Amino acid sequence: MAGKDLNQKLNELISSLQDQGILDDYFDELKGLQDEQSPQFVTNTITIYLGGADDTIAELTKNLSEPAVNYPRVTYLADKLKGSSMSIGGARMADVCAELCDASEANKREACLALFGGVNREYSILQESLNKIVQIFLLF
Image (cartoon, rainbow, N blue to C red):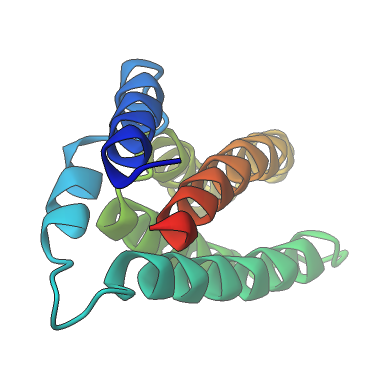
């Protein structure tokens, strides 16, 4: 596939993800930081995000499965995941993380568990979407 076709495919995918609210305009800003000096910037940033998010979600899973939830730790982890998701343009992921922060600050276990299910769902969608973007970038 020619570079022009790949670029069009990439732009259409990003536009579709933005229309669905999965990504927001921050992803465009991230994409704009890539240049000839740093041709792997977007793929490297996505890889770092996904690795960190996996670790944070694993720690949230551990904390929320404890009989006595450490709510300050859950709030910290959810806020950390929200911030990193915002920096990559993961709008829906950041929103559900913000809701988890609120539930954790209110010490609402059932709400935290329900919202953490939402975090997992949104992360799965975001992860799949970002991996598609990386696959296209790697073809350039």
